[in-house]
Picture 1 (cartoon, rainbow, N blue to C red):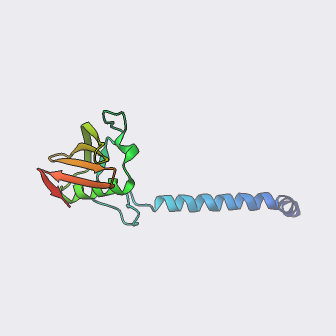
Picture 2: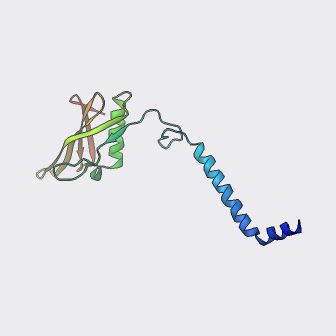
Picture 3: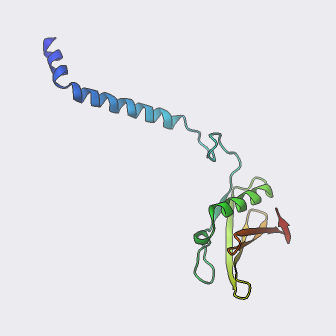
Length: 143
């Protein structure tokens, strides 16, 4: 028994470090296993309705990708508007062609493109001059 106590005293810092590592691993595993399977959208409650828009790397005729020029706020607005006007849509795709235009007279810089869901096609016009986004469905401006 004295032999074991002597070993414990001699290696107490190693045992303490090993104990801490085991506790941290256990807590990490417990935290990971209690996470929901679905995305929470930051709220902590799993989202049922989500929309993935593919094709942000698509480029206009000037070789500029949509994802390089659009802001996160504009992306979120596009996503939310499409979600409001579709049901059970999980995936949408940015379609070619993407038309970039610059009007020198009025100093207006825009990109126009379409996003297609399973059964609807939305026309998107991003105005980089005033940071606005217009979304049309069947030639009707959505808000």
